[in-house]
Length: 421
Image (cartoon, rainbow, N blue to C red; front, side, top):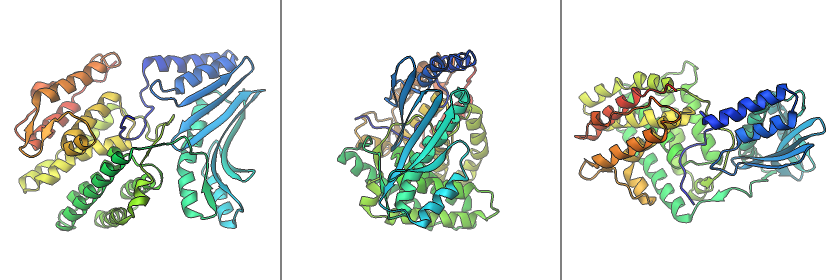
């Protein structure tokens, strides 16, 4: 089983998929509804994943969409569109559970939580004429995202509820789980230890980088699901919330949250290490300009940390640019691939332990494999030229005399990428 990193993204689909989208909208306007929805499902289907299953005839389409630990199933026919996903099952419902479901319903735009037999599900229904492709996309994304998130949260919060409908998830090999858990502990321990050595007032910015990068790095490299993923999301949301809390206080809160993750029993952590297939990406599409803006907002901070002998924090800032982007944005593929390579170089031992043979950077003697890195970058650019014909990365501008200089030259080259198509 191939090892995957980060969260699924459906952003910046290839031209063939965009053509399916154009077809489905045109066919819907022509009132060729089933043909329109057939093209819509082709747009949703990821060619590398078995995320969409269909059964169809001249009058009806039955479908299943995968989203993490949930299966969204339904049909289109008889003038109706129905989609639903099972969330949890129960023997008896408490008032507290019913209140939570009612509160959740007030947060939904297209869908609703409902009861079916002894199960909690989330549903969407519409007439066919009232369900154009654009509405279906956002409605089913809401359904899929909420189903995948709320099943874990509800089962964790209410002992009377049990998980249901997640038999399709893929368990990771035990060896992969052990390696990921080892580095999960290592990254948390190292980050918290380093933070404890710093003055929380004068180095508050450096502390923020250390803590947030640890969370984003775990999210990307270990790609946890379930409650662990939710806890990492909550940390990021709380840090960037516009609540006027001082950053020193926000740092303390994240430090406390990461400490709890470090102390979490191993079996509780590893149960969230599994592989899923998804149809909708969590992060919204973000153009390359978002990456450029992020680089501009952070790269000038590096100089102070280098000049004041905090080189390790300077390295973390560069890694943070990559991990934050991969966590927060649905990136164009060249950005995502180049950021992955950057993280691979910084976290080389982790990748080698997982069985990846390429050694881009030898930490023990601070030596780069220059040609391998240049070849890898050239390969990434070549793969994406059809989509982005103006794309160019000048590998001759890379500096290989030290890790900090390499990272700076690498990020500056990424900043110059031309995504015109």
